[in-house]
Image 1 (spheres, rainbow, N blue to C red):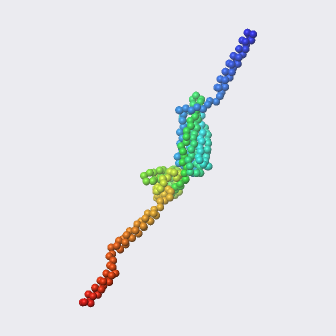
Image 2: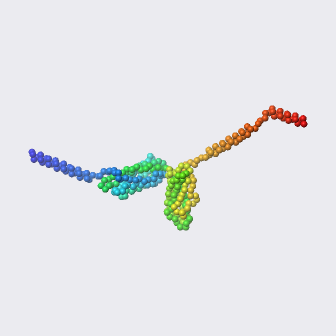
Image 3: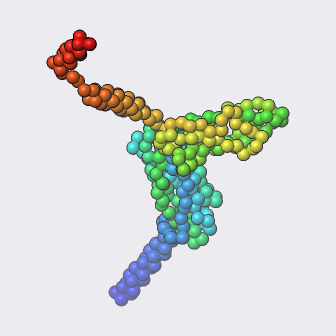
Length: 280
């Protein structure tokens, strides 16, 4: 009986030891869970203003010093018709990502967030979440300009800058890059800008070039209105009423200054005049 108990305890101890060994082995092969850390982050760069159906880029840069970078982006809008992509996932060796986005076909705001991932030096997968700044979608506004190359040879790499001025405020609304303008020729250029970038009311559009040889054909600036042009007809109506009222006052004043002689007095005066003439 004594030997049977010793053998039983030996078997139980061996099973417990094998179970612990299997458990440790299983933990070593299990996937490492994602963890967050304050030393890992990401920056998001995107346009704050776009126009309907415009294609633009969402750029993400994750912290350096890690490896196996990846990124997920999630975008949305009240009406996401035309918005693309709604979700995005990609890997990178240097932690830099550029996501091509198409704006929806409606004036609204695009919102979302990104999840950045990387693996640190200890083999742990770390993560960082950041909101995407709200992107304002507005109606498109088209500006155009005609430039001229007066030299007989082609000119390359021309940049046109479109600037809108409103009072003392100025805003560069677009930059256009032209590869080549042939000698002694003109080139018609245009850009599309979000209307949210344009000041409301009376504005001045100015177009400048980076090459003195390339000149603008016509005026370098033009005045335009963003929105309905103000109606000043009411000013003329008020002026007309004021003039009419002034004429009325003058006429009325002249009538008041005229002394009217009663009819009986005029008749008496006429009789005296006739009697004096007869006496003579």
